[in-house]
Length: 337
Image 1: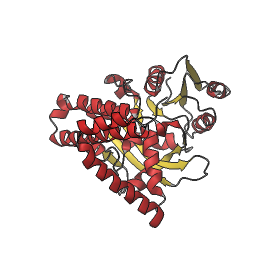
Image 2: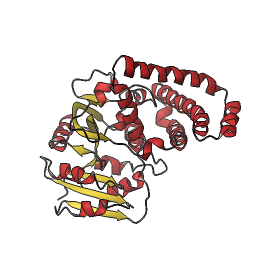
Image 3: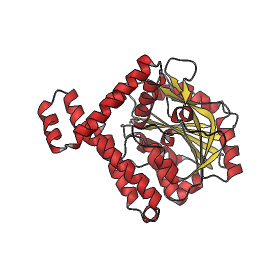
Image 4: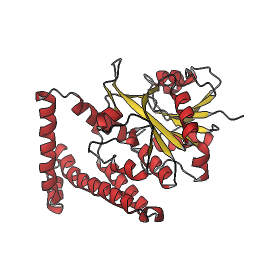
């Protein structure tokens, strides 16, 4: 008999964290689970830590080379046998009751996918500093169905909002299989948003539970220094692709929302095509991009205003979360194993 939930954990060089992630799954109040870890070519002791657990519900798959988070997740998806699929990043963890609570709510609402709020916690600290919903400014105090237009409108790159693309829903595996839905391996960053989009376009019933059971760890690392240009190019390509689908074309509100997101991606792309060469001291490249894209100057002024506003909020108003949420969003979107 198949397990109720398959938990998939893609892992890459997280030997210091993956033990806590695995423990949080094995200690769930719901016992009828399987845990599939896909190590994506780690060079540290991630595999050793994973294989140190003797629980029969756990399976470790090892990629000999790094293929990226999307490919690692797809490998786990294809091996999964559970009625539901849950995703856990290898440096995060679950509250003990998470899977039991979400499964119960999914059955009550006849959901195809259901997410909870997310605890935001800094590496090395013992308690969260906030949650995703609190930082969004949205008032959600009871379970709520999420439609695709709302999902897109509240998840705009670099802007305040709910950003449910950062959440970790559980998915009905039958729905994913029926519609042939997997992670897009051409997108190496922020894959969760695009998987959710695929589900919603196919008509998935998506619900949000406002209580947080997922702990997202914000930790320092090289990801925040990676170029944003590949990521923004991928997002533009993915948005254009979705906009070509007939089901999207028949939904004017969704077309407007996606068009707005695409415009924001393109504006950021124009900005960072100048800023990133400047940071590298590549003055001629930056100058050429300025000449090629005059919109940069308008957006630069807009960005300066935002930078000044954030610093006033932080240093004058004492709003410490203004940089926390910015960092969290960047790290989560930049996930790239």
